[in-house]
Length: 207
Image 1 (cartoon, rainbow, N blue to C red):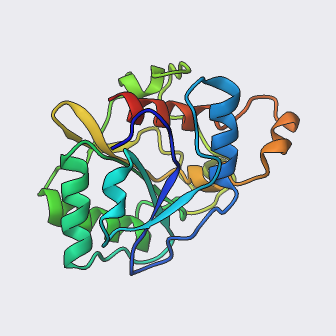
Image 2 (cartoon, rainbow, N blue to C red; image 1 turned 180 degrees about the vertical axis):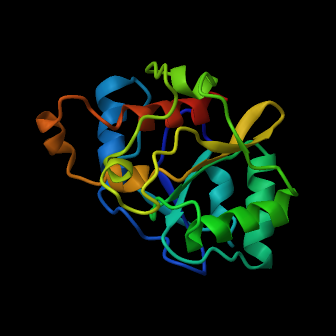
Image 3 (spheres, one colour; image 1 turned 135 degrees about the vertical axis):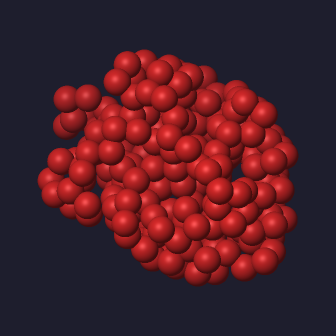
């Protein structure tokens, strides 16, 4: 895996809808260029979870609204990838702990890694200070505040840890939609809300 240059890599899986939040990757890449010195590939990379190309990249993004049901090869690749140093950021576009994506993704993690593998992480975890400092843990999204999804503010993220590092970071907060806008529109925000995305990527590249 190349940990020198960063490529925003999206996982395509056979079930569900994996192609969400089309502008978000470019927005996050712009933030990496703006705030950090790591070299980045300027375009998102799409890889099949059932293929072998994902093993070239240390960071992968997985999202959707619908069913997550990996086939045998996808499940095997997911397990091998994270157990060999890969990092997956999985984000529920429904912002819903009881929705189809949430339930089916958590079921997949249980089937692959066993009961209880996906756990809440403390809000003082290293990922909240890997670049910017988030003293209260995961920042709230607009979708949590406007009644979308389950109408709850999720004050935690979940993760599967392997050898003391986060290997799968899981969010019900819908960060993908939160960051899905043209990067030039950041100038209209009082605070750049993509900064936590920078933290996630910096943690993934250095863990």
